[in-house]
Image (cartoon, rainbow, N blue to C red; front, top):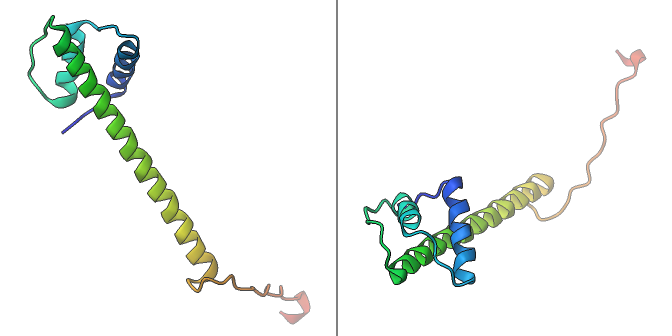
Length: 109
């Protein structure tokens, strides 16, 4: 299971910027976030390729979660729109004209 906290999200976004600019982050920091996110038990390393692979894995995981959240948000918005339409038209697909109820006169009571 992947777990990304707000703090880890910020760090991963920094790693993403570093990758774009061809920089490497501290191997210990990358490994710490990597282990927290993936529940792994990797040891810190000074291997540039290893650090880059971990950074790429973290960025990929964050992007996958963001895509999934966007899909879920879109589906929930569609569901709300469908339910609203059904409430408004009673599920017939047509909007019903509604008659306003006449308020009773004081003399009718």
